[in-house]
Length: 241
Image 1 (cartoon, rainbow, N blue to C red):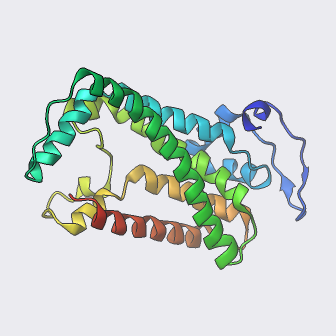
Image 2: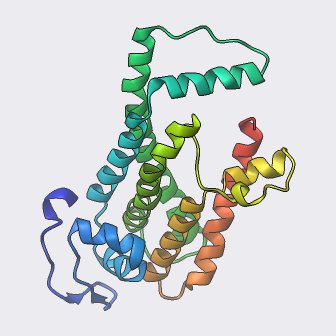
Image 3: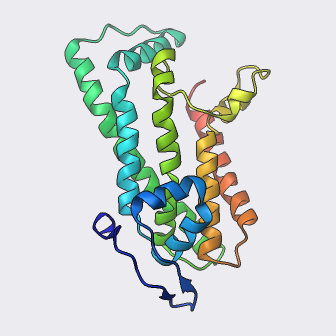
C-alpha cells in the first residue's frame, strides 16, 4: 500500500520499456513537488505509480476545509439561493445544523475520492485507448491524485475568506477577472474554470508526457484543458448562476 511504502526508496534500474526508473520520493516530498517541481514528480510516478497516500491527503484536506466552515454559513447560502429562486426555507434546527456539520466533510471527502477515480478513468480512456499512448489506469490515477493536492491545499487557505464572505463555494476562477461581463451562461462557464483545477490539469499533462514521451506536454495540456472546458460547459447548463 502507498502509505506503508512511501518511505521505501527503490534503487535505480530500468522498467519494461528500458527507461531509467527514477527513485520514488517519500509522500511529503512528492506533494511538495506537485506544487514546485511537477516534472520530477511525474517522472517518478510514471515508473512507480503510487496513489493511495496522495488520495487520502487530498480527501482529508478537502474534508478539513469544509469542516472548518460553520453550518450557519451553509444554511445561509442555501437560504439565499432559495430566496433568489422565489422560495423560502425554514430556519434550521440545532439537530439539522449538527448533521450538516458532520455530513458535509464526509460527503466532500468521498466526492473527492470518486472524482479522482473518475477523472483518472477518463484520462486513461482518452490517452491510452483512444489516442494509443503508452500507460495504464494506475499511472493516470497516480498523476491525478497527486495533482489534486493543489486545489485541496489552496482551498484550505481560502477557507477564512469563504467564512467571511458567507460563500462556502468561493473559489479562484476565470470569472474573477471578467468583472465587465454580464451575468449569463458565459460567466457561469468561467466560474467553473477554477484556476487551481487548471493548474492541476497542467500537472497531469506533464504526467501524460512522462508516461509516453511521444506525447508532448503541449498537446496533452490542450486535451486536458479541453476536457476541463467541456465539464464547465455542462455544469454551467445544469447549475443556475
